[in-house]
Structure formats: structure tokens, C-alpha cells
Length: 236
Image (cartoon, rainbow, N blue to C red):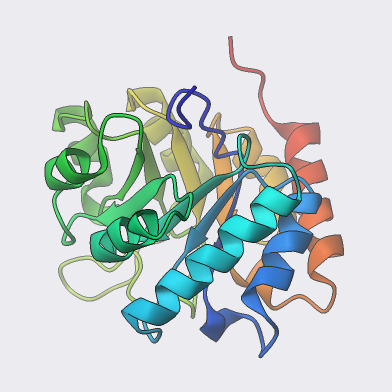
């Protein structure tokens, strides 16, 4: 069965070499998936294409060694070329995450095929309107944020005037109500955000530094997963 059919974005890690305080990316991925994270996105604005392919290879190997290749979804942010090159080298990468200003979703679908996962971030200021009008037939989930201002993506949530718009939990609940596809929310999310976030009905949370820069990434990841499982609203 394709990962698209069993996609689980409940606990979603975004990671690149600039986020790990100098520790190996794969060791933090290993900690996170052992703690119960269900989705990993390789994202780096500083790594070269070859470095991104190597990061993707290492992530896929860690997921495989944990026996979770059919449970944990591995995505690459923004770089369709890296996904295609990785697959050509036999690396199991399940899809891509793009923003509205990146390669169009229909192009990603054409190149990656029907079984691949495609996630989309829409600009925060436009997301409510976008969700109402967008054709989401090629999109598997929306990435939404930020909950707080975040240094890992300082332009996240900028409106047309350059002001950061953060999302209230009421707004997130409204997004979930309107969206035809799953929604994952992040942007500065910390452990104490998980209970109210889970109550909005979102399908999951995404984090970067809450795990990647933690003194004990596995402990931090476990606490986030457990808080989510304790508080998530049951979907019918």
C-alpha cells in the first residue's frame, strides 16, 4: 500500500543540519522515530543538492533499520530534484513538501506519481481563503503556522506588510473545519502548546527545535508524542 493511503502526520519532525547543534541529523531522526514520530521532513537552506541526497539516504536508512519504512513517511522540503535524484539512487523517499511559491503541486504530482505524498504550506494570511477555494486533489495535507514566531523560519507567517501573523487556536480550529484534507500545525510549537493544539481537531503538529535542539532529543520527542496522544480529539 502507498504511503499516501496510510499517511500519519500526527507527530512530524522537520530537520536539517543547521538545526541540530552540530549533532548528526540521523541520530536525532532515530531518537524521534523511536519516540513515536510518524513523519520526517528533510529541510535545509544551506545544504547542497548532494548533501540533501545524502541526508535523505541516511534518514531512509535509519527509518528502515528501525523497521518503520512502512509507517514513517519521509519527505523532502521544496526540492523536487533531490527527491527524483534520491529515488534514482534507490532511496525510499515518500514525497515532497512545497510552499505556494515553490514548484507547483501539479508538476510535483506529474513527476512523482500517484502514490507519492505531497504537502503544501499556504501563506498564513491567505490560508482561510485558500482552503475554501483551492483544488486539493493533488495535495495530501496542509502545513499551517506559525503558532509562535520562530527563528528557524523567520519569514513564516508574514503578511503583505511584512508583519508576522501567528495563529490563534480558534483560527486553527476554523481552518480544520473548512479543510477537505488533513492539517498539520507548527511554528515555534513547544510541549505546553500540544494540549490546546490537539483540541482544535488538527491532524498533527510539526516541530523543529523542540526536538532538534533539545538536550535530550529522545526525551523531548517522547513528551511531545505522549502529550499529543493524551489530548488529541478522536476523529470519527
